[in-house]
Length: 221
Ligand SMILES: Cc1cc2nc3c(=O)[nH]c(=O)nc-3n(C[C@H](O)[C@H](O)[C@H](O)COP(=O)(O)OP(=O)(O)OC[C@H]3O[C@@H](n4cnc5c(N)ncnc54)[C@H](O)[C@@H]3O)c2cc1C
Image (cartoon, rainbow, N blue to C red; front, side, top):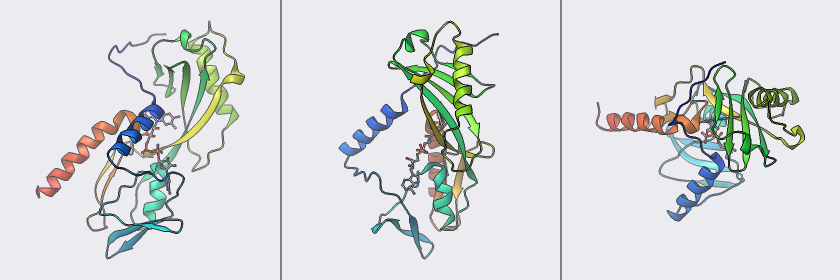
């Protein structure tokens, strides 16, 4: 078995990143409304007129829809077809118990689409691409697969499977993984969708491509 070592490879803690980003945004005056579900978008004269959440309506100059694979459902109501579907992924996180001491650098298995990543005092095994719609049930078999992989990569280590914290989530993914950037039928409504299963890794590059698109569009090229 062989492997390639990328000495410039980096990993990050997505939760820590989001918490830090939110704090920065808060300092710039952004107000967050957690636990309020957007139920719909109001369309008037071909433009988004408001965002509806419960009994509240939010009116703004510009609207950004960043609701992952649920964006497809929200946009469908205003006639925008987004060819993006949820692809379910799983992870297990082992905290402490010598887990991190076992591995200092991340290991990615591209064949199995699985990664084992040490961060802080934890070790996370993430992977799996399951087509199960919006169902967020944790499948025990999928969790077992991740544990098996961990034991295969680190056979000399003993892991207490009962300490593994399981999780699953949905990746918003387009059929070919290529981001969708372009104008929609709704007047002045531009879609820039990060339809990549690796939103964290590719977000910066896709934003750059989208920016080029907006600049070209604004200058009429
Ligand atoms: C197991 C797994 C491993 C992954 N590993 C990697 C990796 O190693 N590298 C990488 O780059 N990416 C990875 N990804 C993908 C990455 O998590 C996503 O690309 C990224 O989270 C997309 O960010 P987002 O903000 O667009 O969407 P999301 O993170 O899906 O956030 C969307 C948010 O919108 C909220 N929302 C949805 N509908 C509504 C509504 N109607 N009203 C209000 N809020 C709503 C949701 O609750 C959610 O908080 C992984 C994904 C999974 C599942």
